[in-house]
Image (cartoon, rainbow, N blue to C red; front, side, top):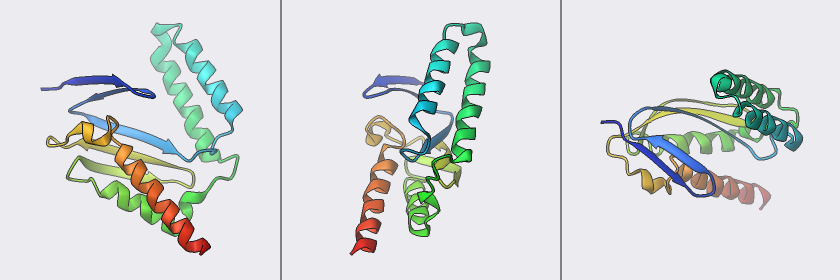
Amino acid sequence: MEERHYHRRNLPHLYYNDGIYFITYRLNNSIPNHLLKELHEEFVEARKNPTKLDLSKQKIFKKYDHLLDENILNCSHLIIPEIAEINKKTLHYPDNKDYALICYCVMPNHIHVVFRFSPYAIVGRFSESPMHFVFKYQFFERNRVSLYKNA
């Protein structure tokens, strides 16, 4: 049976215990702030017309994805082999434990991930966010690699 879960922390989170999730996350400063603000304003405006909201969200997502692919600020840390490997390991670590990793794509400044929660997953273990653990581990490992290279 599909259950809907919603909670708020710093950002609202909505997830279902069953379903396939597609998440894109990016490096900080990979999109200029003024362009992010424009996208946000476009989204706020789109919410005023619920009948066209789905189409508007698709257009906004395409613009967002294009900005990431265009890589205006030349933020390409994810192509560094050590950092790419850290991301690969951290995406695979919870695979078959907390989620089933379907696929992912590591780009120079962002990552696309497709997964399904495991029926045995304790979603709260991610601090109410499915990728929270992955982010924490990646942050730790990236810092470790940076310290090692600078030593």
